[in-house]
Image 1: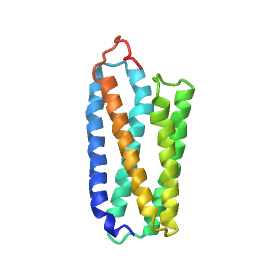
Image 2: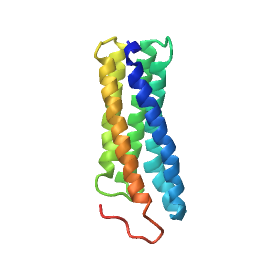
Image 3: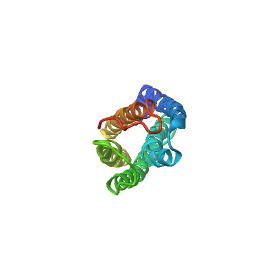
Length: 173
């Protein structure tokens, strides 16, 4: 089922891995911020982005792996979707309980939107598991949407972190 998807995953997986590498550079920009505030922010903003991009690297690698069964890829997509849903719920809880400082739209971009995409990943994984021909297309569309959302979220972090020093007022929401 995934034999014809080689080029797609050859682009998506390394692009996701490259963005993870760039996020390490962003972390180095946080040296001027209060450590406690930074640790809370990393837990709710940075770590989830790395996790979500890691899911894309994992699924892309599995789809490229020679002679891996479609059922295994579908099962992994399904499992990653369930884990991602739980992670998105944790992030939503962090925002709603005010455990971390956030701005307008953060709940939707970092929590609810990601949760919706992981629900799509569960559906895509199930379609692949049941041998539905549309399964790889749904999976690919969901992965592209997740990747684009992570580009947005990573950019959001760079814009927020880079110009700040301790004592600077937060940027307008």
